[in-house]
Image 1: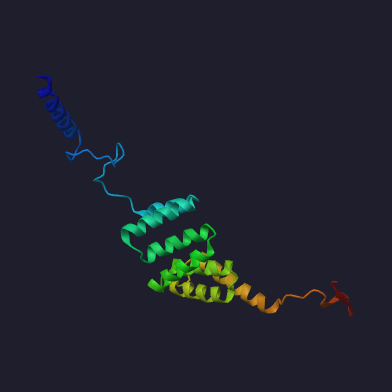
Image 2: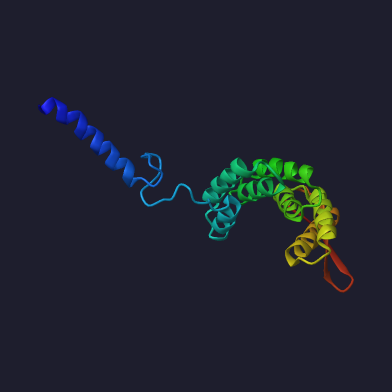
Length: 186
């Protein structure tokens, strides 16, 4: 008699659990209290907010998730590149930002961030050209791009006039009116 009750009891429990689930099936992959049918928040938006909060590694992960859902477009490439720049990964940032510029040569944030990477890597001449392109595309409206361009111009001009002195080289120094001294570092 009890052997007939056990299959009925199992069937009743299974039906009861299925009735508790909104879709009629029990899902193990959804955390409690999360509506799996709801819309996900845009990964780019999450990444931008994390960047503002200084959470660059988490922002990079959010940008990768955004690239997984919407594809590698100029927005996601530029965002991934800027997160790598913030993390100090200059080589990765440069490669990804160049891909973003290849996708859209007029995308100002990618141009600006590539210019920053190039300045950090000591490639002042190319950075100046990139900042000029960003400034032209932006029509000079963004203060940060204008300041970056002025910095690149100043650095490129100072590197022309300020040639590094080799050790042991002589310098002519003015002491008084009409008197000069020849100095050297030994």
